[in-house]
Length: 474
Ligand code: AMP
Ligand code: ZN
Image (cartoon, rainbow, N blue to C red; front, side, top):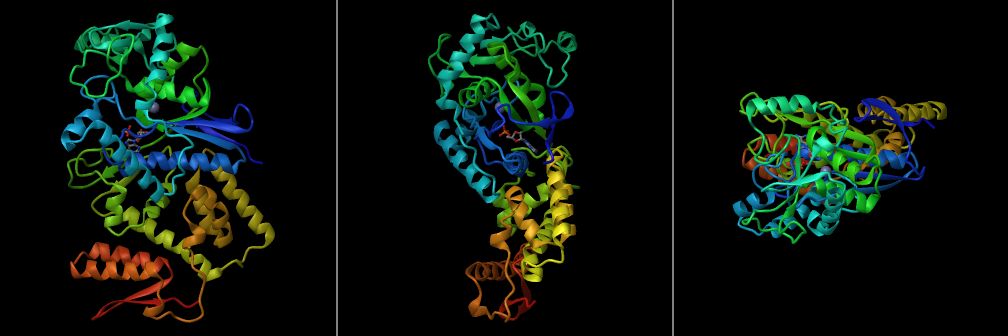
């Protein structure tokens, strides 16, 4: 069998992957900070991690997948300054931070389900694992890796000889820069030093007693403590978005390895960003962020008539380490993805189980797809090979990785055109939605709904009484 090869951020190379015990992959992924809905940029990262999870399964391994829920301690800047994102959002929404966290955690998993993202085996909440974080900080303190300031307990990066190895950081240069800019926070010895435990925050709502006084954990220590609690001291794979390389994941490595003396993760795998392109918006060319008009949620896609799986398909067409541009003026990439997905769903009625491939051709095409997926998750190459093979059977076979609901969404051909009375409930709903969209002159939505109905194997027409839908014949 072709081995699985992954680009390891740590070695900057593609390396052959095997779980350390040969059986079960211990996979940790940095999870959401639950102070708002996830935007489709965040979800691109979770789709990439889901594709990795499914690929590990395709290779025959079990997957022990842990993803944290950050519900305290993530400051408005990824370093330690600013306010806690949870507390700030709670004030804005006039909820308690606890209510806010549960609300957005639930919303996050609803969005994941709409995108066919497999739920992690465990999704531990930071607020429920504070004791483990305190114990880890005490371990670091006992070894002399910490110091105290007016803000709280800091990690002393000068004591960690290979600090910054993930991102190739140069601490001496940072220090020199900081001296010139004088931008070292009061009490911090080096700009890269980071907080482990916040004290002296009287207005903070979420706090816990600790050996250093009442306070709350820093964001980085949360991931180390929860990853080690559920998966042991050395993970097989740790994932995240590329923005996490220079600060968050770097700090996770420093504190975990100084505490245990072992490597924290064997493989580090990072996904690239979804970037917003808009000729008019100020945010043009920028990454999608949780504020501003380029903030797109799965619900907004649905409201505009798109199938969330069309977004998943779009993510399959770009390699996870390449940036993906999303034009929020034209939505052209999602329109094209909707069409392509419709074509896949049509295959069953067009060619059925009996495609033109001989057994050898089928086996060769299967190998091509398997090899592409195994080559650092090259899903764009796999999807191209699948389109080329024109085989419903092959799409169905690889749907365990693609997650596009190929079997349930595809329609078998029927011999007679259905008249409106026989339409399945989902088509009747789509037809009504399209009539409503046309009444309110929302033509982009009406077009998207037309494409969605067509994707189920129907022809869509207009009449004075509204949308007319006919089942396609063979
Ligand atoms: P957060 O909830 O802000 O901690 O982010 C959750 C995940 O989304 C992290 O793994 C980030 O790296 C990732 N992320 C944030 N913005 C984007 C984006 N525009 N495109 C892709 N991933 C992103
Ligand atoms: Zn993390």
